[in-house]
Length: 419
Image (tube, rainbow, N blue to C red):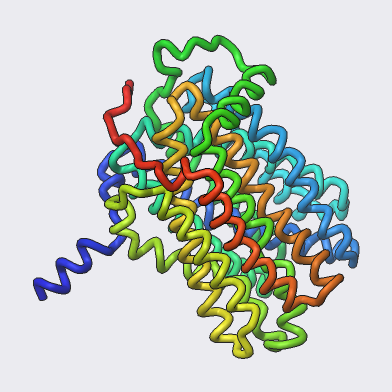
């Protein structure tokens, strides 16, 4: 009993950050709203296809979201460096809530406008692009530096759990009711994050940040800081390579039809998230690793090789298992990338760094979808799937060897100045 208890204490997810009331409230709000958002993420393409009978229109949903994400994540991050982050997060959350209510209203009124649907998605993406880097820049002000790996593991695990449970529940709601019911669930869930944001303490810029306003000049300054910071630049480059080269998501429908059978599609889409959740629940060791740069590179290599092996699997369950291994490695990678960013960059640049982080995180998977689809059209889905995974692992090793700053990195967990 003592041995098993000790094992659990060493390896179970570290919940110490939840002892801080402000972080605990924002975590609960994000968990509930993240689950609710998955209902909208499923309902929007379902409604769009029902309106247009066109996969092209469904594909335009991604473009409608990507453009605001890339633009406003950078600008929102710059704003987060010069204003009270609580107020900015509250403003972004209110805009997101209004967009969700708009989706609900157009469904209830049976407006049947694809253009309106795309516009509301763009508004949601704008709000997310401003709110997400602001939320991440708040975390280092709510928990001590030594607990940042644990806080990021909690956040990533919560996000991936929502990615698994949300779509499954959304499918049931859409089967029994309609898209309006799905939007209503999202709107109701989002009220919890509004409550959590209202309860945050004021989080003004720290004294001495030295910036009075935010503009594109400040965005450029943030990009320049990344360019002159090899550790951060390499962490972004490795993540972009991992997603753009190895993500096989857009190949799932074709592989389900040709190899695994139509009933496999749900398992394929859920498999990466399942592995991430399991890894998160057993992530108690993550905060004890000092060579975080090495751990990040190893995690990306494991991700790429696991994805490549899954592309060769002849059995659905072997493919799901291997993709889950990849998902576990991806969670470890995500935790260390976020932790390195939060501990390496100074507070006055946290918003801008988080904005760039969101742009990379949002853009990488969409580039991966495009890469996989185009490659499959040229050489077939198996080569596109396996080759992408191997390429991601090779690029990660090549970057680590060519630019050793990242693998040498160890965090300095000194106490950061706080309000």
